[in-house]
Length: 154
Image 1 (cartoon, helix red, strand yellow):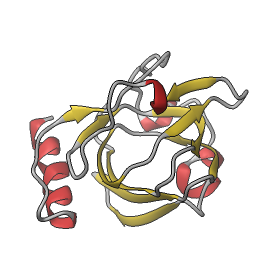
Image 2: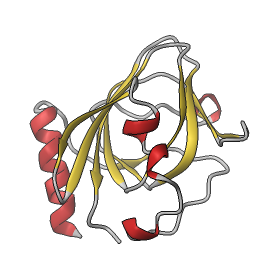
Image 3: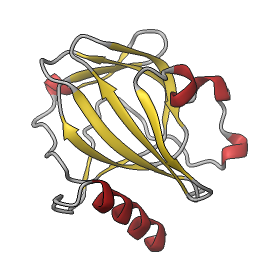
Image 4: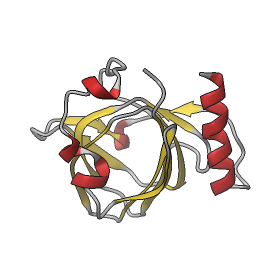
């Protein structure tokens, strides 16, 4: 596990060479963590994968048997269609805006306007796998981040 963490930090350091590396977690509200499951038992279809279901907002930067690196961009006012993130990831934000994450039925899972503070830019954030959800940028700035999804974590 520690070796995989170092790989993820290395990828972020390569993409953000001036980043100060420390670790925080993304704020959550009313969201239960998913049990970690092998890819073969992921309960949602591949058609909901972020790169397939929301390609206008997710770009593949690198993929191998260990990691998948994705850039996410969401302009102010945009709503990203329902999608999933199968693997846990290390996220690095290059720009931030408030957002609302909803489940497929439209129930609010997270509204960052109600959290205590915004995350720091260029600081690694740990994310657990995310079940089907949409994201709406409700702020005035672009959301731009790179996430290193770690495939080897059961």
